Length: 246
Image (cartoon, rainbow, N blue to C red; front, side):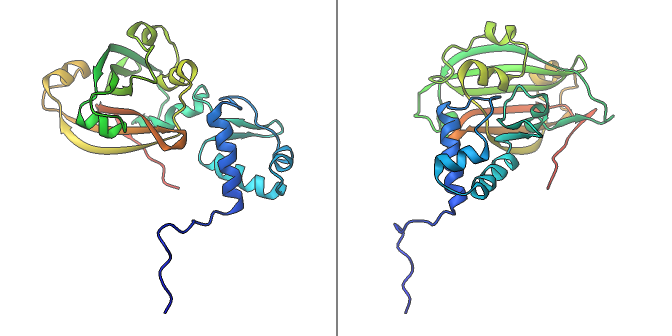
């Protein structure tokens, strides 16, 4: 009778996945920074002593996961949050009208605290570890539509301040990438309907008790490390949450 495999038995990984892991290690270490070109597939094939087809398969998978971006006739580049196309990858709220609206982030508060049980669990930190909490409004066409409360590991974002947030002109994720070397790779979100309390109603300009969409997100960087936990309240009278399923 065949015995079940040992729990300690090694897990087989296809060769292209191994090459993908090696390229990811280069991204994580900063060998190739956001916005920079990575070596060509032929150069990577020589470097890792594999076929060009194996490298292409690894890079194809990374492109599908938005880790790198292929540019026709130019090469393959490390994805960056500075790319305008990346903005709505994490922000799924769009106007009902279908028109593109200018967005503006308005920081309200930024303070240091100690991680309570929930923040510690979400960010994989020790209870009482240093964290930074940010509250901000997100406007669409000069109208407040989102209020966010964002929790960040204090050790990674130790220099973050309200002044820094107000001075920066790009998105929050662009700031995290540019000033702290943290790139958000993927995120998990949980959505539910809630009623606006007095504070959120005032900030969003809606009546107390109005329906809002609660969006809780944990964002991860390389190595599947959680580096942001945010809780957002979305006013959806004129906007909807759009998620494309492929």
